[in-house]
Length: 572
Image 1 (cartoon, rainbow, N blue to C red):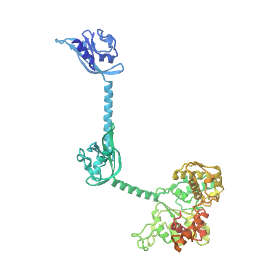
Image 2 (cartoon, rainbow, N blue to C red):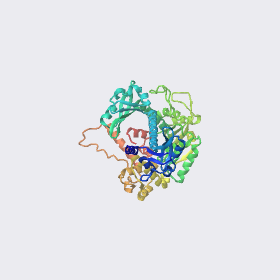
Image 3 (cartoon, rainbow, N blue to C red):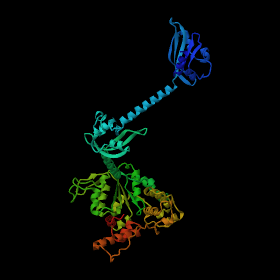
Image 4 (tube, helix red, strand yellow):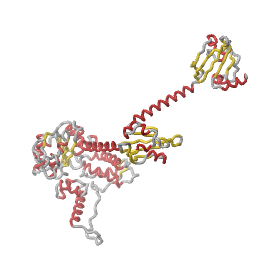
């Protein structure tokens, strides 16, 4: 019987130590030896404090009182101990026993449980606070979880979903939960209608896999109505931004030449004043860059920036475009009338490009705007006050135009308050290397290329050219050179450059073989004339490096008429 009791005590997980009334150890089971690390030692018959120096069993013998659930360190572990006196039938203390166990593992497990509870609480908080509508089903397609966003979107509450088959919320379409459970594959962008209000949604779903077993499916619903609304608002915002936006700043103007830096410095000083500015320079020198930069440097930068190409709008439309019109002002006038570009730019800046192409009649009305700070719509009589900063630009010799009677002298003085002369590229050729690097970076982004530099010989060739088309021509030149390169080529070399003479060789159209014997389809005389006209315009543009003013002069037509023909024949 005694042997059976020892086996039982040695088998228990709890450590046990017992002493008699004199403090002599009578029991020290296997678990106690393991925790105290005294295996293999002779322990029975020894006084307790000789074996366990900090034992309180002698104190229990003395007081006859128990100490329960006491925590204490034991070497490198922590234990919890119950110490109790052993009494005879008369209540006399005849010994004491200590039962203790290692609580280090218990504490670690408790910490893990606490962490798991905290994580669970956080996940539940995320699940319930997210604005995405989420539903979860088990492996049989039965609803187990939904969040508040799901209820808001579908109009279906928990009791209608939890415990029900997942098709219960579908008003139109197939359940993506069932598809996922069948295929064990995710589904994206499924279009459905859900709930009693037949809300149109985009749905994504994915399988829930635990230990390589399918346990269910989770779906996220997106309100398509809201997506459409936000998309519309984004489109409207983009339109507004496009109207308000002046894209360039002075940092976008590349160059270190003294003449160019002087023009930039003058433009910066002019920007902070309300004065009218006249930008003068050849075609392609960057007048529009300066106009954008001046607007962005001014206190009007958060207001509208409106660009008007005075040569590109036909004469009979230009006045109504600039100043607007009243209802019934002319046949086809919009009901309620329409604001002109000056009114649209109110509080901001209007950029009048190619100002020298305005007719004398429109010049007179523009003069009134600059003098009186007011406009009168076409067909109207009531003036409207406006506050607009005017930046004008031209590549014409206005002084010569005044002498020939094509430009009003009084308007010239109103526009020429702060003249800024932008030098042609041939006057600051030392900026060409900087400009080339800038355009390489630009076209790398646009074309998805990785061009790194230009060779010395190729750069020398660029420095030797005249650049009658100025910076615009150089930009087109570099763009064409990169197109000529293979994808694995990193350096622009002479062989990549377009034909010499400083001219961008646009795609030449071969002469028409007018009377081929095998023509299957004959063309009318009008069609032949159109083809001939388009090809000749392209030729003259090529010869003039796409300088439109010189092209119009060589063709013997007005710049406005040239713009009309370029638009008609879809020539960029």
